[in-house]
Amino acid sequence: MAKNPYKRADHFTREAKKQGYPARSVFKLEEIDRRVRLFRAGQRVLDLGAAPGSWSMYAAQKIGPQGRLLAVDLAPITIAVGPNATVRQGDALSLANEDLALFAPYDVVISDMAPATTGSKIADQARSFELFMRAVAIADALVKPGGAFVGKLFMSEDFGAARDALRALFGEARTIRPEGTRSGSGEVFLVGLARKPIPAER
Image 1 (cartoon, rainbow, N blue to C red):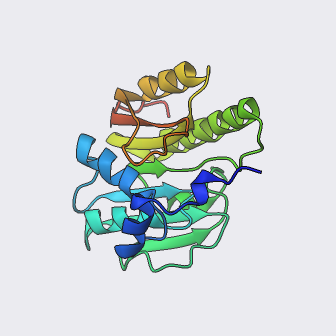
Image 2 (cartoon, helix red, strand yellow):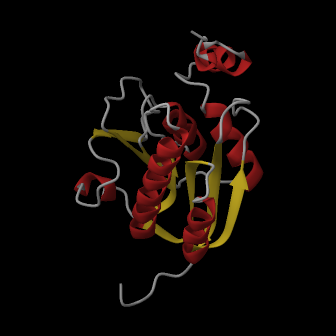
């Protein structure tokens, strides 16, 4: 049986551990932030599906002591994210979860969520698209005008629909495949910038 290449500790994994982050994914968010200037001091940020907590740790540092971050996941987040962060265990994709609105409206909503892979590429892509669209729905409800969204998606024939969903809500939609993405991965990140004004009837 072939070894799982994702279990190998590469440069990014070693560097994440060295800097105190639980996962190498932090460098993907760092690159996205560098390219689109996602975070600023004093912002309010919602991290959907935040465990194990690397993205939350990075974002909490970037928004500083005056910022507020809410990290939500069904799994427990056991690391110390930061004094400006609040952690909640629960469904990050349910608008019935009142915890999500704790610091709303948000300047930025981020989601590094991916489905547990099944071995079926088509099934995994479909589940990734579903997670992405549910995260977009949360952003639609909770991101303030001018705000931003970042979500992970497995590339598939649904990519166009995912991008169009962001374009409907944001002034700009960008696709980024960070350098830290493993060579065999089909994941990309869709970034929505400059949230459009929210209709008055809402």
